[in-house]
Image (cartoon, rainbow, N blue to C red; front, side, top):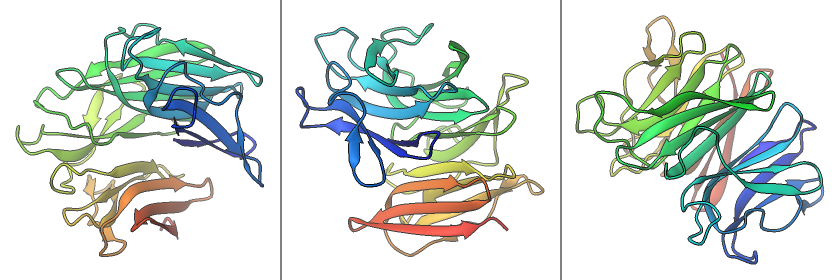
Length: 289
């Protein structure tokens, strides 16, 4: 996973097959010339799977991983929190209030309004979502193993999240809540004021065969955008029409099968949408109307 430091330098965490134990998490940053290690090679004490990076309000780097070792010190697939103080890593920290046997399958993090937000897709029957907030050194549970009451299945393919200026959290995932059988992409909003979850528009049909791949992003004026693969696996984007209270007709970037979709906005309103086609990176830049 990638992130940016307060000074604008890009950071990346990845599964390092060259570490002392294969698939330990390693973190690097780009200094303008080359990629440099953040601390030591192989941050985690054993192999990991999914991971995400964020900086907190004190510019401390936080790494969230799915611990994948079988000999401790954490349970296999337990959420592992690692922090870098500028000199060394402290790892194998756990989330207060989260049970050790709660399987962390996918993680996504976001720094907003002076807080770190962490969303987790829990892969334990029934699959669910958990949402946490880190402010002034303290974790708060916003959602604990949440799922739609009408859903009997939640897909593990993808998860994404963004946060607006008021602290409302937009979560993108896949479930079958619309009809009890068909898996569809959807976006829900966690209300910071009410502590409740509501749907944003109707579910969105994506790539068939459960090959979901998407990203959700909020523009500087607060408009939600959803970047995903349609049923032909083409990269398409929709925005949420506030007046119609529905997702717009999707714009097709190109009639090509794409993967690794990513969407981000700059503070001045430009969006960068990228995807991979035949091992080549394609990047679009556009301005919000």
